[in-house]
Length: 142
Image 1 (cartoon, rainbow, N blue to C red):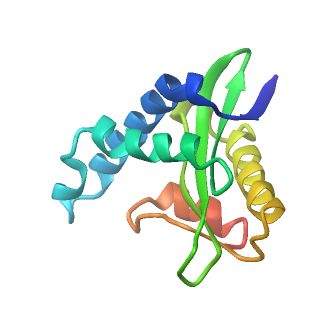
Image 2: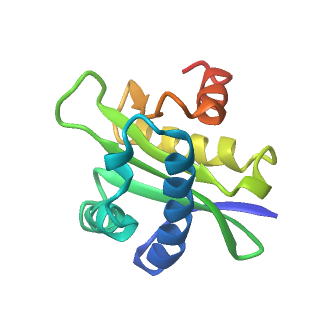
C-alpha cells in the first residue's frame, strides 16, 4: 500500500537516489542548457536537504513508499519574497511507479503542508521540455 510521510534526515540517502534519477531524466530532455546538469547531484541536492532539515518550519520533503521502498519524493518551501508565498521545487516518481497515484499523493502532501503554514498561493518549478511533468501539473490546473 502506498504511504506518504514527511521525510527526515534518515531518508537523505533514499531522496538523493531518487533525485539523481530526476537529474538523469532532466539531462536526457534538456539539451539547451547542458551546463545546468554538470554539477554532481550530491553537490546540488545535499544543501537543499540540509536546509530542509535545519529549517523545518519553512521547508519540507515528503517521501512516497510502497512496503517501505521509496518510490518518489517532493520538496517544497515557503518563500519570503517573490510572487507566491510557497513553491514546489521538485516532485519525482520512479518511471515504473507512475500513474498509480504516488505523484498526486505527493503533490497533495506538499500543497497541504504549504497551506497549513499560511501559504494562500503556491507556485511550482517545471522545465519546459518536461512534457510529462507539464501534463501532470496542467491536468491539476496549474
